[in-house]
Each structure stands twice: as structure tokens, then as C-alpha cells.
Length: 452
Image 1 (cartoon, rainbow, N blue to C red):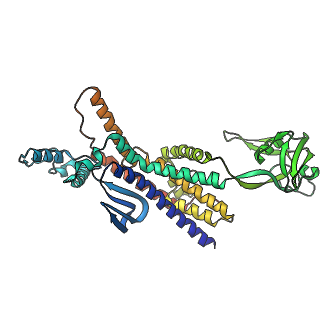
Image 2: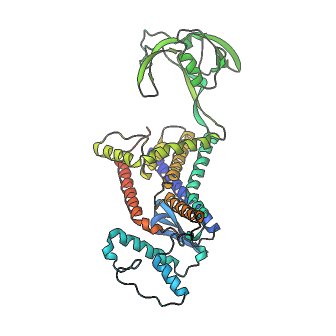
Image 3: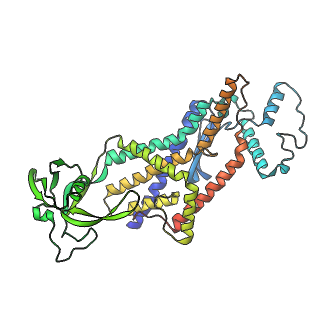
């Protein structure tokens, strides 16, 4: 049964990822169509096409590798200088004179331009093919800057919205596991310290001596109302040797008990990571744990907090992947807060599904994982490097700045930014992403992070 539950957890994560990708691409598709851009394809996954169907001018489908998705919009980049000259010559009914060997913008002499020059020219040629004969009013590069930003920002925002919805279901619909003020059990004795086991000579607990029983709910301590076990524990720990008045609820009626916490040694960790031993109060009660529903704004708050945390990881991604590679080679323990591949996320989802815990706990764990994955997709896609969405947004904003500058100084409007010049940078980014992805996948297979 554990193996079956593990497989179900992995499958659920794959489906959840596919839905996340589909919504991401829908975030691009809807505004693109709304603004009149011709969209040729809407695909979930990469590689060979498993299924597709054309509705209107757009082909919708699924591909074999569910690690991403894309939509293909007409005119993602402006025409190359060569194509613009051809169009101008055709407009004036002039004869197009063949370019001399090595002339700017021509294909001749490309071999002498080096590897990256060839890549730039190939990108321009491929883009020009999509523009020849196309309706100029329906291409992406001709949209106003703000519309291009909306189209490219739509995908990541869909991931953020999905994460907010998932966190809202988790926090408000299901609740957060919280140690309550209801007593679940009594300790067997007062140990010498917080890590010691009971021995026959150890005294009974103050809770047992005062008459506290499992099932009692602590209402207040010394006149201070307590909402959860953390508040009750804080009062007890700071009151070693001092008699406290407990108001408890038992069988619907309130009772007042006098409890004097015993003094034990406890190791305390400070905010800077240093540890020290302190004398704290101890009464010997253990709390029940329940799902406590949170206010409706708790989900969005958690999503925003996660954005900050993931942004910190993304900022250090190369260094963290390097550390993961080192732990892979040396067999050392991985950073539990480090980056994961989809393989690692699938493994964690399988562990959650196979855990020996109530089904509601497993559902909550899966929702938390999927919500965190969507936060990661949101942050990662906003990195201002092509081919990521953030790179396209950066190009559009740069063009907007150039146009505003020209307008300010009453100069002619500049030509659209030729993003094909950034193909070498895009190539380096893609290679780096593939390399980092390979390291993470291998680490998640050989030296995985485990929840338990």
C-alpha cells in the first residue's frame, strides 16, 4: 500500500505541475488574443506531440516532456534590417540589388562571423519567415509596450494567483495544525532535564499532583487567557517554582486548580544559532493537535512571504546548485531549504502521500508543496533574462525607455529593439539552466531531500 500511495503522490504532482503550466500559458494566451496577436500554438510540454487539435487559427496540444510549455505568437521580434529593406524596396517598386559578400545584414560571410554571429542570423531568419506575408497589425512586436508587458507578465501572475488560491484552501479551508490548550496526555515524571528519560526515583508531575486530566482544556493561567499551547507554555516556562492558578474546563464546567511548575534544565537556541542552558518551569502536560482555520487573508500573506523566501533562493541559485553538486559527489547532507527539481518535488509528494498520517494531513501537505512550486515558477520566470518571461519584459521596458527618451528630446521614434542580438546570451542562459537542472535531477535521484 505504501508503494501505491507513493506512486499516487508522484502522479498527483505531475498532474498538478501540468495544470500549473497550462494556467501559466493561458495567462499569456488570453491577453495576446485579446490584443489581437496571432497565436499559432498553445502547447503543454516539450518534445514530440502526443495530441493536438486546431481551434480557429491556434493549435492546442500536449507534448511528451511535461517540463514546461509555450505559446507561439507571430512576430515575437521585429523584422531584421534585411527584411525591412526588402519591404521598403518592394513598397517603392524598386529592384532589390543583391548584397555584396560580407555586407551588413546579409547571410553571406556568416561563417566568418563566428558561432554566436551565426546563431543571431539564424534567429533573425527564422523570425523573418514568420513575418513574411503576415498581417503587420497582428504581430507581438508592434503592440504598445504596456500591452507586451501584460502579455508576458500574465503567465507568472497566473502561477501567483494559483498559489494564493491553494494557500487559501490550505489555511482557511483546512486550517493550520496547531497545538491547542486541550490536554492530550500527562508526562510520567519530572525529568532532570528536557532530554532525560524517566527513572523510578523521579517525582510525579505537578500537573498530576494538581489533578489535571487528559481532556481538560486550559482556559487561563493566573488570570491571563491562553489561546493556544504556545501561550500556555510560555507562562509555565517563565514561572518555575511559582504557584499558578489554572482555570480549566472539564465536561463543560470550569474548575480552578493550583499548580506549581517544577524546575528543570532546558537547552535554548538563540536567534543567532547559539545554544545555552536555562532553568525553566515544567508541569508535565502534552497538547492535542488540531487543524485551526485561519482568516481569509492568511493564504495571501503566506504566498507573499514565500515569494520573498524563494527570491532569496533564486538570487543564490548558482551557488546553491554548486553546493548541491558538492553534496552529490561527497555524499554529504543536502540543505533542506535548497532548490529542487521536479523529480525532487515528485519524491516529496510521494512521501507525503505514503506517510502514516490522517488523509487530511496528506492533502494539506500536497497542497503546500504545489503552492510552493507555483511560487517558484512565479519568481523564476521573472528573472530578467531571455528566454524567460522576465527577459521579454525587460526588452519591452527598454524599448519604452528609448521611446520616452526620444520623445522627450523630440527625436524620431527609434526602431523596435532587436532582441535577436541577445540570442548568444539566451544560449548561455539555456545551457546554464540545463546544466543546473541536470545536477538537481541527479541529486534528487541519488541524494534526495526527505521530509521524514
